[in-house]
Picture (cartoon, rainbow, N blue to C red):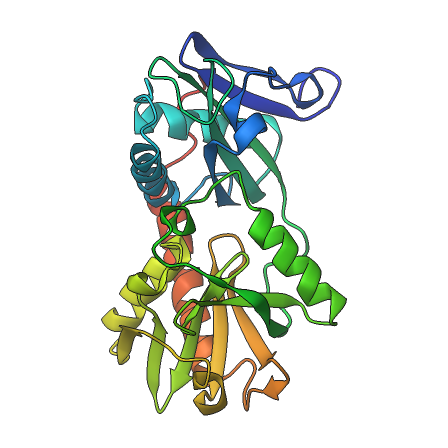
Length: 303
């Protein structure tokens, strides 16, 4: 918080040193390509005990995505970004909540072609978590009325341009559902609007493979690691729409909300929501986040 007790954000750019400023004073110039074209990426992370336990994974995905977009190299180390993010949480008094780190391309002339001399801008904002971190209420899902193309590179990026997710959520809410799931052009399950999806079929934990087009979710990767380490049978595969009728459990994975049970998909009720596998996976994930928070040894020195 600033001297008035109002939220502050952390801003870094290619042409200025990083600094903090009141959130109400933060703005984007008209030549910002994130504002104009959605030419930018973001990461939404969980703040826990004043730190950001999985931030290294988020930054690795962010840098991979920026390379895909041929962004100029960020003139900040991971440590500098981590310090800026954690200090943003500290200054705002957020011990448990979210942190959104956004990067946009700026500069150059109008037009879709990215200028070779473009600069970048990064901003971090934090806020408290909406609701408790207990097991979320099971969700009712529907399928989006259009298909995702897994060959489109943007499907694997946390892009500023999230209009497909906005439209999908509008559709879900309009038909009385909580979440929308996407199928790809081959009618294989992909993901939700804000989460990856897992199903339990015949004692096997399965999730769409990367060739199906899902975002490489941070929580998705963590679940795969922990489930395999615990001895579960885990598989990444192409999952047909009909899988829903075979599943005994389904859940969504989100870096912010963790494990979210699914109670129904397209009117088909799941036998267990949350079921025993869902509960076990959630316990594994929450324990890993707690351990990561202890190992982080935050907060670092104030910037």
